[in-house]
Length: 164
Image (cartoon, rainbow, N blue to C red; front, side, top):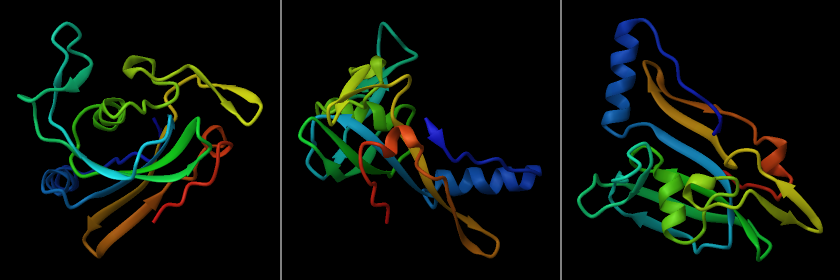
C-alpha cells in the first residue's frame, strides 16, 4: 500500500495515538482500483485468519467485527476506482472486504486480484496491489489534523478519485 504512515514519539505521544486508533477517533481514507464495479455500500463482515494460511485473512463468522464504507469514484465497466473508509482497523480489512464482494484490488494476487488490466486500449501491469492510503484525520492537542498523500500516477492513470 502506498500513501501516508504515522510515526509518533515520545512514548506519551505513542500512547495517545494508539488510544485514538483504539477509540476509532482517527478517520482513514483510501483509494483503490478494483476489478469489476461494486455498488457503493457499507460492508460489515467479520474477519479472521485463514486456517491453512494464517498470514492471510478471510471473512469468518467467528472473527472480529470489521466495517468498511465503499464509494465508487469512477468506472469504465471493467475496472473501477473506489474511495474507502475503514471504520475498524483489521489486518488486510480493505483487501478482504473488496474480494468478498467479488471486486478484488488490481494487483492483489493474494486476494484474487488480477496482475494486469486494460486501461482504455492499454494493458496496465500492477506490480503491487493498487491501494493507496490517501488521508488521515488524527486528533492532536490542538484539534484534528489532516494529513494527505497525493495519488500515485499508477492509480491516477485509471481516473480521478474524488476524496471528501
